[in-house]
Length: 304
Image (tube, rainbow, N blue to C red; front, side, top):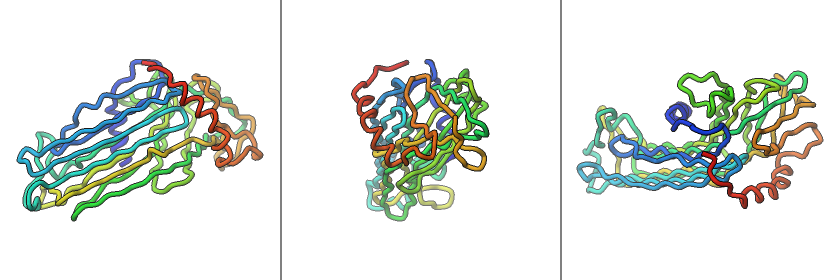
């Protein structure tokens, strides 16, 4: 899943505006390995930016039907994503029928399914206290993985990616960008920590967080060819949610570094912990509720 997310990020649509935005993207893979057009949806960095995507494909010989759907919502500090996939065998048995192949992908080389990616991207300035090594972002994550099928493996997975790069690189999606990347697979609900290494101190740099939810059916194999039995479903649902609740400036040993301040070009006040007396993440989550409600009501227009 990590390799797949990196591939999707590098293949993402080029950014043509300033490096402050929210973004929702969908990457479906059909039964023949093709990727139907799913245009990206941009919004302001405070968001929320909301989008959905649904579709279906039918195998060329009529043996399979695929349906998929996804939803995404992105705003600064809050990311929500879901992906769902169903492949149905339309005949008495698909065990002897191979998945259709394309010019670039055979039935054994791809997974029919959907990936949903939601982003926020802003410009950050870190004025560091002595000994700062990284920023420890703590997210509260709530979601589910589910699936069913006869004799098929499922790919239900989610990952949270943090990136930092020079402002001139915009969304950190150049073909060979110098950037700091951290990726954390999401395997359970609760707090997760993502370390972001500042690109440069005391000067602005681009940073972004991406939540990726993936749902796909992994074919069975006959020799080198894949097939899918019966009805197989896969769902990854993190529509409630991955929410940033605290940022801890820490040294190389993980100790809090007092005196560190962080500002965002968007003007959003990030929840930076400046002392050990700062409320724990669960308390911060409650105190941020009113501010997040204000951002929800703003629903600013597109920035691109």
